[in-house]
Amino acid sequence: MIASGLSLEQAPPFSVPQRFFLTAPLFLVAAGLGAALLPDWAVSPSNSATLALTHLVTLGFLGMAMLGAMSQMLPVVAGAPLPNARLVAWVSHLGLLFGTSCLVPGLYSGQETLLMAGSSLLGMGLLVFLGAVGVALMRAQVGDTTQAMRLAAFTLGVTLFLGLGLASWLIGLWMPDAPLDWLASHVLWGLGGWVGILVMGSAWQVVPMLQLTPPYPPRLTRWLWRAMLAGLPLATLAPPHWRDVGQGVVALALITFALATLRLQSQRKRKVEDVTLDFWRVGMGCLIAAAALSIVQLRYELPDAWTLFAGLLFLIGFATSVVTGMLYKIVPFMAWFHIQAKVGFKRGQPSMRDYLPETRARGQFHLHLAALACLLGAPFQPRLAIPGGLLLAASAAWLGWNLLRAQRLYQQAGASGC
Image (cartoon, rainbow, N blue to C red; front, side):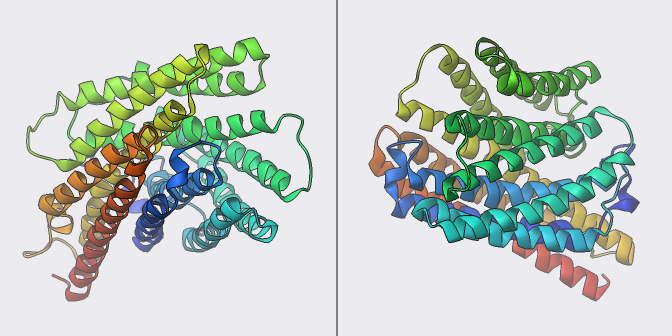
């Protein structure tokens, strides 16, 4: 099951990614409760509640999970461990934790003090992480996954720059010539770039190794990251009539990735029940729909309800589903591996399935589907925002409990030397 070319002996301590993974669901719980308590978000994509809740998901849940995944995958996949991994994880985790906790209420209330504190803490935490990632990537093995990680780190840096610029504008420190263009670029580089590219690069390793599929064709992976590398700057820096071309390239690359993933999953070597596949299939379907809507929007101006619908498809349908499915594979695998490295293989040692049993994950998947269905209907029927938010909070709490249970089992197995 362990793919060739992986440097598992260079994996960081289990605590490094786990601090991010265990914190991530808390922000999704907060986003769900906020969606239920502030149903006005379902009215307009520019509503202050919408902006605040969006950043709870993107920075709090996705940001935490993806920084944890990157700190784990760089040494294992690229053979390039983060320098001072414990210190980098500690500083970047605290920066993301407290920065998001300040920025989100600042976006909702417009309080300049909270906006300044949140953007400063986030800038500090993410710059420390990006600096360490940059050093690691300079020593990384060359390959399509490594190239995707380099591009993902670059897009995170661009997203951070644009976000800090927008926060400075809201605080009143400067006035950009076209703030809406800044916002559009921030969204494109953050979602299509950072989230989309990192999921792609991770999938090229995680899907074949942990879902037992054939590998992604090298020509496809090479084309995908190069298409994103060309499309994102074109959509941002080119003359107006070329920007639509760049956005179209990004959308088509994401659709191609989703279709290729679904095809490989249909060719699995072992046809056993696996809830993580269901999370991924839902995610890929939502990614195709969201990217297709973004292409339609290039030609026709969509109403606010459809813009919100597309955003929910991407954030909750695609990104949250795939990241959840990834956590259900990565956490058990790394717990199992670290126990073996720590105490050796012994009878009675927990298996990967013991850390996160299928039945527990399956129950959370059904709750996630119910939340997704309600939230997707909320832009057209705002009253659905309340049950949708509550279901999302319950689903995230269940995910957090499952991850915490895996952490406890890992600690017990290590302490007992089983």
